[in-house]
View (cartoon, rainbow, N blue to C red):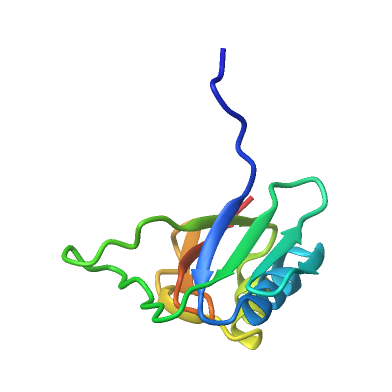
Length: 119
């Protein structure tokens, strides 16, 4: 028997509204602004939350001395089309040059790593 149920994944960031807007454009869903805390309700999926963190320092990837802590795997039907879309929304590539792999690694506008993964 489980001890708990996952409520929400929370990302620290300097601007919760902006980062929630980025992920809403990528994943769809509804942004619920509560000030220093913003929720993104994703249809049929796990909610994400964004919390204002003064002095936020983005993770480094890859870096043995500065762990990324976590990353999101986002499943897509077309890697090339999804890549174009996330780059237009403000993501930046971290490891996306190998076109033979089934995933590509990017950073969101606040610097959190995420992967686009082929369905």
